Amino acid sequence: MGVSRAAGTPAVLAVDAGNSKTDVALVAADGTVLGTGRSGGFQPPRTGIEAALDVVGEAVAEALEAAGLPGPGGARPEAPYAGLVSACLANADLPVEEQRLAEAIRARGWGTATEVRNDTFAILRAGVNEPRGVAVVCGAGINCVGMLPDGRTARFPALGRISGDWGGGGGLASEALWWAARAEDGRGGPTELAAALPRHFGFGSVYRLIEALHLGTLEQRRTHELVPVLFAVAAAGDRVASAIVARQADEVVALAVVALARLDLLGEEVPVLLGGSVLTARHPQLNGRIGELLAQRAPYARVELVSAPPVLGAGLLGLDALGSPPGAHGTLRAHFG
Image (cartoon, rainbow, N blue to C red; front, side):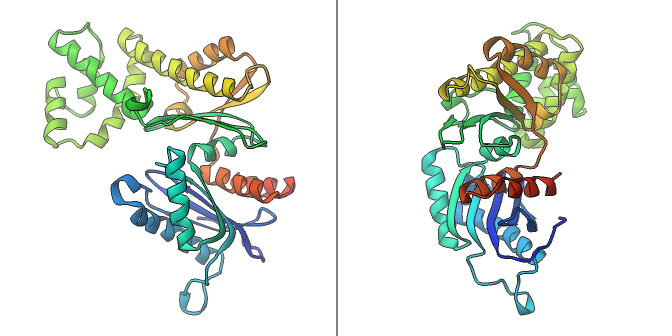
């Protein structure tokens, strides 16, 4: 990954660790990016915390090398590598999980101090000029956080159906399959999803698609490919598909409004940021309905899409914690475009 080299000791080791990839940036006190690195997904529920942090360590090592910090023979410099590790991590859904992950990162000695947050906070901070606003992320799953400059936050467990969540790419694909199966066998009403979903994978019926998923000849992870199909069917006017899209919009707005209310922001002009692959795909039906509903329930909210990389948000949160001047934030933001 491209870097801007500069003299000086890294002030922040910014980490954005998602389920599919991990990005790291070494940031100087003036906001200059000294080096960046990338590695695989961060999945402590599947691999355990230490193995998951080993993956983060690969990105850290790459960032050190890009910054020209390794010693003779390519050996790593002696830790700590930065004054503060600002880590925004997937699967840090509860405060107790953040605490456990922070303790594990401190044990690695990467920074003099360590702060850990859920990765949704990185998306929020990447999209605002100050730590004030609400972000709803709809990617594989769905989550929402809010924050204020005084440190107050709003958040949800975001653990799936057991914590009241609905939607995200996984939920949308599952819902579309549910309606398609019932349409094909007669338990539900007609929908074009019954033909479009299996056709995407080259099957002639929903039954054959279900069979392939159940027997493992088609990997479950590939069901995320059905989300664009769902939106295409909805855009063509299918009633069932359109209802699924409308429900997703309702869920996004419900999360945002509750977060705004918790932070006493319903009566103030404030950004509501939309992130994640489902929302940044700019589906007119989904994003249009979100805008309409927010205008009714939170009329002062400004709806914006976040396209900046989340590692920028992790870095900005680190500079916030260090009390860095605004110019440092601008320098860091400019690096990531």
